Every structure is written in structure tokens, then in C-alpha cells.
Image (cartoon, rainbow, N blue to C red; front, side, top):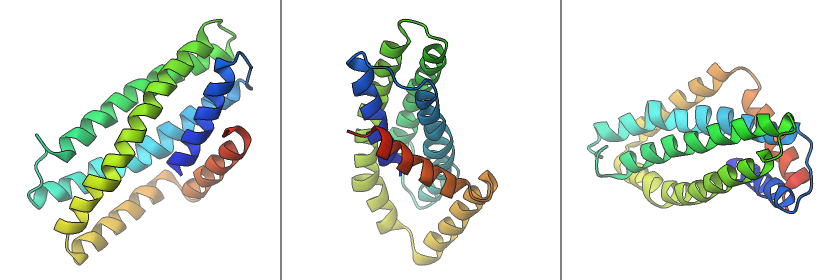
Length: 171
């Protein structure tokens, strides 16, 4: 789902770089998706549940993949703050807002491409190898509680949003 929103973000940035306009609510909508789904839901589940569980199993925070992931989460949040500020400025019609949005978005997309690769090829493989079946089941339950705390239908809402954004803006 995150990758679908990133494809939409890339398409929006390409249009803005060509000097085309996009509806003012689109950058804000993408930022909202990233803040709520990618960061609060996905990264939140990792930070509250997966990382502490891995640490309990002996995976080090410092000098290991957990520390790298946490640093990248913080770096990504900084880029998203820049994107949010630029999206607001774009909605107000500020002349340099589109270029500021594109710059922050490109940094974020570059980071996320590397981050997702590291999750898939390092972090999640470590988790698969060090966590037993009951621990994995407990994590799934914890993840489900996190999603439920966001509100009924929130996951489905963001899944539909990612799909709509991708259809409208991905190139």
C-alpha cells in the first residue's frame, strides 16, 4: 500500500517539475496518507511492538538493523514535515512551494526505497529467523490492536486512498 502511494507521489512530483499544476488537495492528501498509514500505523507497529520483541530475542538496537530503521524513521519524519509545510504553502499559492514539495518528496522517496529494501531483505528476515510461532502470533495480535485503535475501517480507507491516488497520479 505504501508503495502505491509512493508511485502516486512520484507522478505528482513529475507533473510539478514540468510546471503543471495539480489540485491543491492532492499533495496534502498524500502527506496525510504518509503521516497516518506509513508512519503512525506501519512504523508505529514496528517501534511499539516488533523492535522491542526483537531486542528481547537478542537483536541489538545499537549497531544493528533496529537502530538503522529508527534513524530512518526519524529522517523520514523530517522529510514529511517539510512536505507538509510545502503542501500547505502550495495550497496558499506560494510560488516556490511546488519546488520545495518536490525536493522533500524526492528525498523521502529515495529514503523509503532503501528503507523498504532493508525491511524486506534484512529486518523481516531476521524476525522470521529469531521469532518462534507463539511470538509471531502475539505480534500479529498486537498489530491488529494498533490498527483497531486507529478506528474501524481506517485500514480500508487508506487502502482505497492509495488505490485512488495511484490510479489518478502514478505514471
